[in-house]
Amino acid sequence: MQITRVGGPDDAPLMQAQLSDGDVRLSLLNLGAITQGWWVPCGGASVPVVLGYAAPGAYLMDDAYLGAIVGRVANRTSGGRLVIDNEMFQLSQNEGQTHLHGGQRGLSGRLWDIDGDSAGNAVRFSYHSPDGEEGYPGSVDFTVTVTLKGARVTYDMTATADRPTPVNLAQHNYYNLMGGGEIWGHQLTCIADRRTPVKSCRLTPAAMISAISPRLARWIRAARAAISIWFSPTPATPPRRLRKWWPPMGCICGCGLISPARSFIPPRI
Image (tube, rainbow, N blue to C red):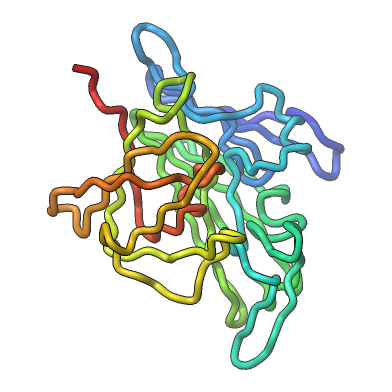
């Protein structure tokens, strides 16, 4: 494991961490706890499976949250309005009148403290978000630990707040399991029996949680083709297939699913 400075001023250095396990490599940045790259061996080559910029400094201008930890609250908050115990808080608005992925400069735009764990082949990011940041009540201490074991990358996230406040983090990688080309043949399995519907006009979550079924599943139209989605109520239940339109962003937080997920490339016969 290596941690090196790759840019930034002395009082706000941009740091890069490199993890490896055999032929698998992982590159991380302290800006937004970003996953810059993840390479796995395939067909005798080292194949990238997440989208990222080669130059770390390019992330300073990125507006697509590539590889970042987004929050305090991922997804969209309509009007940027938050009510806790009958008290209304106005959050920053960075997508028209909507609060998206933590606001004008959410966690994805902050420099996190970074520490390495050579024994565990892991990197620990930490960030203190003060009271009132982006309009949120209370201060929150966040940690994200990224661990590489074999070909598996694990993200462990924690948050400790000093008063009631919402926290809904998301890891915002863009995956391509082929290492390049289009992703429309990928399949995603979600272990879930519920979903959060969205309002079609702005993709903001509706105030409800609905059961997943072919009748209730929303068809979200995108500018591109559909991806096959497989839903399974429990890990032991055979998944059932739905054809569903995927939002253009293509991230888990955009589709409103509230579960862990795994994806694979269907075999070619």
